[in-house]
Image (cartoon, rainbow, N blue to C red; front, top):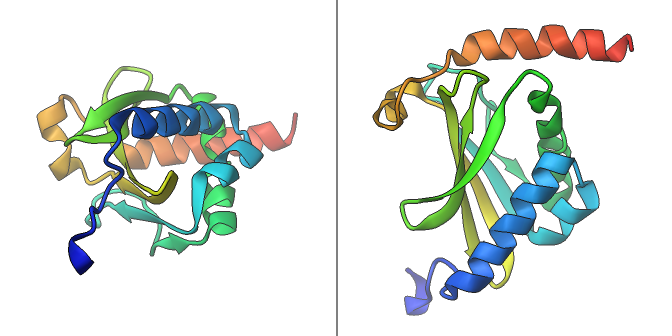
Length: 153
């Protein structure tokens, strides 16, 4: 670590408040709210291990990350639920399908009052300890089919 600086926000109350605002904005599709919480050079990273659909590479920059995150509310239409939780001592959430199966875990790296990284683990091999795991490929197909029908409304 550079110059012994802490990697994450030390003040838990600040971290928890920021995470709460983030997940609220995420669920509501509040693009401006999301953008104001993200560091300018924020990175969205997804770990699927080739076993689930994921971003082909990290997304960098608040504008790009905000555009990706703005799609999340559409997943609620097919029954996905975001449950904010502390994950390994950090602010995060578990994403579940309509049957309560685990689809992904999100973890926020927070420093200086901004979200520096949003890390998503969707690799089913890394999620089994949390309970039954959702079929991410089936959810992707359902989402794409629903998205086509949303466009015709």
